Length: 463
Image (cartoon, rainbow, N blue to C red):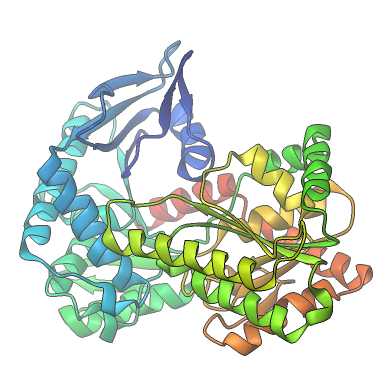
């Protein structure tokens, strides 16, 4: 069985020595599957990229093809920056006030989805055996139905990486019914949690008049299953990073450079769904409430640049700059800075050293499909030795449904959130170790390689 995979980004990146896999995420999970089964990966090529439209990978002994769909500047702006990131992203995270419905966005989204579907079908028609299509995420909601129209007996799966909102929220979109119908062309749609799957089924029932049979949506005679398939991380890789002596050395150097007794760590993309401003305000209240901890604790907040072309993200960066400056000006003294705010990208090895150095991971998104930072932190803390770390995790993340051992927090409760660092920092080592071990066990069971195998097995059954 060959696999035709559709995803927004290609799984490889150029390096001075050729091409290398992207670290983390889908590339870690799906490259081994593609190399074993053969097939193709269909992705977008932005207007400023000079990557090849067709590429065999790996260079030596190619196992599959990468097919890139080129977008011009107008298409990219309307499809990616517009419909994907200014409409579908905020609605999925319940941030209705940030949705910007625009007919130009919808038209471009349909046109680009059609090109993705045609590219996937072209590859499938050249295959020697019946292929499996696996579409990833909200960038390609119309692709399953378009593939079904071109190949009636296609085996089609979708994985939805973000939350699926309640039916009454999703229906706000002018194109809600068309988008839903597009996804219902699949045989299986996977979500991180059963709650998201249930929201999807209810949306199909309420907006399309579909029949719900158990966990499946039946529409126009076609049966589409909606299931929970929570994704994880490459556990072996992060355990290896945690045990690397260079990681321990970098963690020790980082703690020495900060010159504080305890470190609270946040690692996020700079995204309005991550609750960054509320987290900064909560830490400010923490310093107000516990003056004896001033000079002893610092919040290290990593904010990876993201979607810099979207106005809401540019505003968030200005707000974060102002908040970190205000807190440091108000409370800082001598060499101690209450907040160490870093607006930059970090590699996995660098993140592992930060995870190992931190006493508490402060993971408090307003909404999140899952949250892989929580997985990474738990794995590094368990494998790295030293004092066990503690996890504060938003109850509005998908990860809160299945990671046992974190202290759950409500991100909109400023006073409650301000209490969380103190409670986590004060946990004794035995309780920390017990909670950390429960977290590590749950993360191991959700390893990303097992996720891919489980999803494809369920897709075979559904189809």
